[in-house]
Every structure is written in C-alpha cells, then in structure tokens.
Length: 133
Image 1 (cartoon, rainbow, N blue to C red):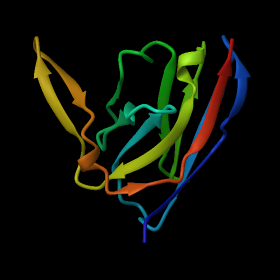
Image 2 (image 1 turned 30 degrees about the horizontal axis):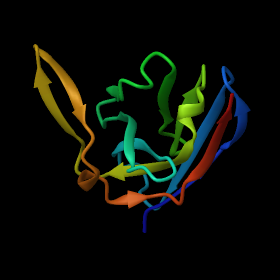
Image 3 (image 1 turned 60 degrees about the vertical axis):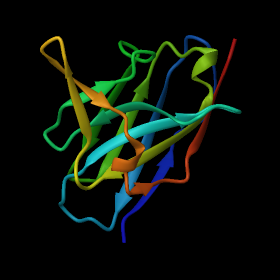
C-alpha cells in the first residue's frame, strides 16, 4: 500500500525559506509522477509543482522562480524547496502520487502541466506552512 508522509512545514517570516519533504513507501522502485498541492483556509486546493516520471518539473505561475521540486529516487523522498516566501503562500501542503502519469497540455509550442487532481491516486496528510508579514 502506497503511503506518503509530509514533513518540514512550520512558521517563517516573509522572505524566508522552508524545505518540505515527502517520504513515500509501498511502491518500491516504481517511478510515479509526483506533485505538491496546497490549500489555504477557505480556498480550493491548487497545484503547486510536479515532477513527472521522466524527471520534467513544472510549476504554478504563482511559485515559478521561488519553489523547486526535486526527488531522491533511491530514498523515495520528494522535496519542495520554497524560497522568498510570501504570506499568500500560507496553506497546508500536500504531496501526491500519480501512478499513471500527469496531464499536460500544449500551448505556443510548449508543454505545460495541467493540474488535474484526478490523476493523483495517493495523498499525504499534509503539512502546514505559515508565512507572516
């Protein structure tokens, strides 16, 4: 059974950094598309970043240039390095796994992630990130 456990959340001042981790178990050496989502209070959950099973990352426009997604396949750990944090980044952050891959779309000759939650079959419990001004 696939299990995902996030860690690394906390409180930080605006401009600061945090690194989230997501430890995965139950899927051996299989490589999934992995993603980070977040949900702020009274808002819908939104996609933040993914790294597809070919290693290609993509990000929501709101975090591009500030967040970096990476993974350690040997340890089955997914990371989200968050820098230049803003109060609007305050949310509960979830990692998720898409065994059958993530959705992409083409626009202007480039490929972009389509953050379809339905692709993600496995979810962690989330870790809270709070950014104060």
